[in-house]
Image (tube, rainbow, N blue to C red; front, side, top):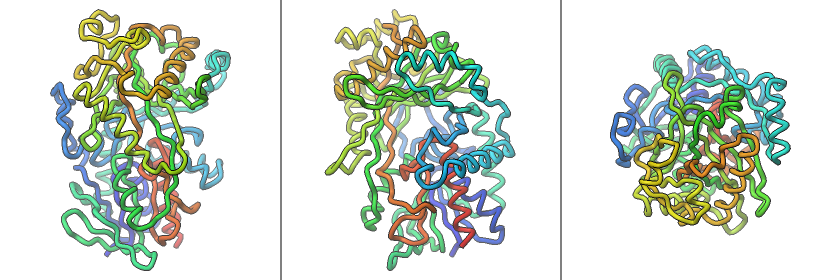
Length: 457
């Protein structure tokens, strides 16, 4: 029996634990994570294997720190990026939460460097973006780098190890709900965990489980936008005038043909493209490091589309598109932008003749037009031409497009302003897996908010 039980060891779950132990040091708190401790997390591809082997629990996504552990650790210091917390509280309250979480990251070893704080320094970029019909979102970023992210998360893990019960390599199987009151959950090994309060923070990796479990318990959900796109890789010099000042530029565009929102996401200067495995489906992502540099920069272009009734399964939609790429290429597909425009597949020889050396060597040269729906594909092409106006060279025929990149947000859970599920008392749902956030900082902030609500009761 615990006072609080937390499902998921990503930033949302970690920051819930950090704050609840501060406010209620005598309480019994449990955190369960289906992956290993941070020091035991491994990805065969990071250790030299050239092909993803589809581990049962992807080492890049599961374990202490969640999907952010091996990411490049970008902490976006504004409510305008990385989630929907302003739908549940005031803008200034979210700002305060972000500032508080930022200080916690610093206490646990985060770097002092923040990019993009002085708007006057990038006024010319903002003007060029406006002329190209792009919206540049002001988003100061504290960049950790993958190595430093691991150090910070290890420090948090060791700190909490002395204060709470942490269970690794087990997962929550089913919730225990009686008379609209959550009582606990059952693990995959059959153990029954009882608690006064349950906090569900499974991340995007656990979004599918969350959706099915909530449907079973008749907990209300609404459709989230579906984000589908590609990862773009090009010479670092092309984006250097922007990344040297902003590090990560958040640019939003509405495609002229369909009017859909296209946005840049997770920009990695001098980084590398990586392969991730979501329940047996290979998708693409990007990392950058504090001390290891490549000659390339990569970023995602995601097309957001919100569907209406009777559509209810955004995760399955994304999985279906990603599985088409896997079917054609045995994993990730890569195509030169010029080949896409010419209506031909890329070949290994054409990739070799390019001025860009791919950082994801296991990607199969192919044709993304056989995978991505026409609407999303055309929107991406139009966005690349718009970006070329502020960073000449983006729309080069040699620019590499990897597919597909999908963000598996579940349908958004119906929540109160305290992030408690509507209809089931004492059950809180936070982070990316709940469709509430979509980044490290707002996920962390959602954990602090929920911890304070629980402690106040």
